[in-house]
Image (cartoon, rainbow, N blue to C red; front, side):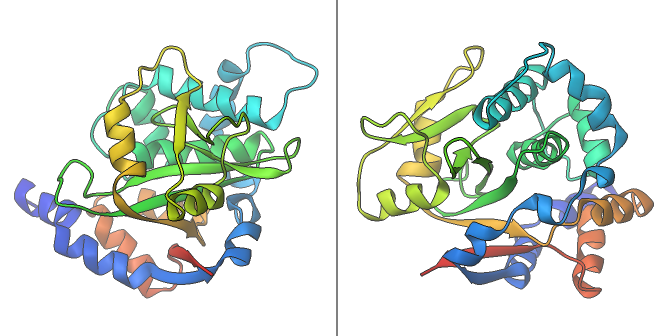
Amino acid sequence: MSRSLIWYFRRHPLLYKIRFRLLSKKATFDRIESFCYNNLNKTIDIPEIYFELNPLIFTKKEAVISDLDKATQIAVWLRNFIKGGPGLGKSSDVTLRKMISGEGGVCSDFSQVYNNFCVINDLKVKEWGLKIVSNDPSIKGGHAFNEIYSKELKKWILIDVSKSIFFYSTNQTVPLSVFDFIQLKKENQEICFSSFNEKNRMDNKRISDLYITSNSSPFVITNYHNKTYDSYLNTLKFLPGPFTHGLLILIRKSYFFEFPVH
């Protein structure tokens, strides 16, 4: 298959829009609040490479570590040891190997591998996306981020792994959840953000463009069975990714994009 055809099937905006519409649906806040990636993906379903690399993240043997500390340690390690690059869209084991070897990785790739590290470290996690309506090509494609559950704080926390940031309301020290963020934005309240990674320099304008000033709609990714996707993406690796994703839609094993509604 020619390079131009490969690009067409991987990146053409029309194909992306068709897939996005097929997979999108509305969901209640309660349904999304109770959902987490761990419900569908167990520790035994995660590829071995995640277990091999995990000791590099948690080098200090601490007796007790909070969920928030655990979440930031994983995120900091990923951001500091992966330089990023082109989008990969591969199985979770191949994606992690390519990211570690410096072959690429965009926000959705970071979110994908972050999910699996959270699972093996007993940390509840969700993956979110932003659908952004904009004429600015730099943000038009949207953005991916995560949310983790803190048992100590008894709430979900929005965490952007690729940007190394948490969000806060004015004068508050507890990070926002996605629903907190949605409500504050709806009320036109001030939303702040700060980095938890001293080695990663924030691009304040880029972050504001993505989250604060854009006309964006967050959606959670549900029904993603990592073992299923890994199996199909690895077995059919000779095909462009969208063909494999299309097959999973046809056989009703695809993930969904669920937009919260009251």
